[in-house]
Image 1 (spheres, rainbow, N blue to C red):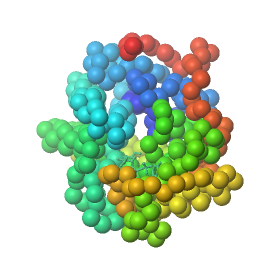
Image 2 (cartoon, rainbow, N blue to C red):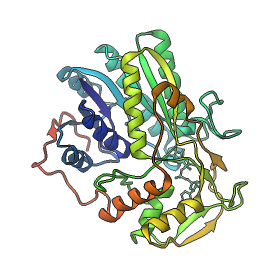
Image 3 (spheres, protein in one colour):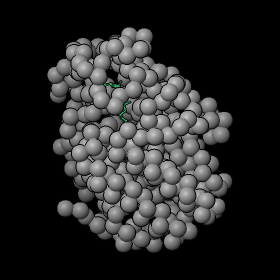
Length: 355
Ligand code: UD1
């Protein structure tokens, strides 16, 4: 059974590809490589002894996407492709709306044309906006505080309209909390472009000497130590959640949203201390002003995913920190400096190349 993975070369995408191959799915990846590298896929192939068919293709390029569907018997799509930097989305909103929303519209339209109506969508806990309480369940009111968040929210609504219009569709909306960690091999992981916006890649880059002090955004929140609380989830647990969601959409119809989190909240200082403990590196930090738009506490009620998908996260923050550190210390520059080698087993079908 062939599964199309959009954005499969990225952080969560590559970890999901690995688990899909391990579970014997045949996968096709489309990615425009705007924030990723084929090196991740090459390493997934090495780790699994498997084969990935890769197309450098932008979802906005409908003609190329149609060609991909013509060449394969695609049964379902896992859709990761999208831009995700909150600050950047405020500066260039039109680019975010066009890329994320139009990209998804094109994808769904092509899926419909080929009668592929099974979709797992990469949403985010950001759709809960500023939650009134924690833990957050899927029935909480939805809102957005920035264009990035609004693209996720709008796409969720578009996908719900699609299911209403044609009940043959089956869609899972996966609302991720804070994905960190890396595959235990230390061969694949998160490799952000430029200075990381998110906590864990910032910490690992401080530890490896690429960045100076960590800035902790606020120590006056109403939390145990005053720093923000988040639900950090190991990327391998998250990847396994996609497999469970895929199994469900393949067997059912309709649309459902699921929180993918651990249900446990940890403060920034707890994360720093745990990272220091497992890495034996000191993370110097400064306490600075709160970051605009941040909430005090955000963690999931993940019981719906447990009940309906049979999924729970099993990895704790020590393992997350250990794996993030193994990845970063083995790859101080991430995937940078690695270019595609023709020795790789990745089948390159360059049907569209963006310059
Ligand atoms: C952020 C985004 C969210 C997005 C998610 C994707 C914002 C406001 N939110 O979530 O929309 O879906 O990433 O991964 O950008 N922190 C520091 N110093 C840092 C970085 C972070 O103290 O250098 C703190 C933050 O204040 C927060 C916690 O660490 O309390 C986690 O931050 P981060 O990793 O950026 O995730 P979110 O803000 O939860």
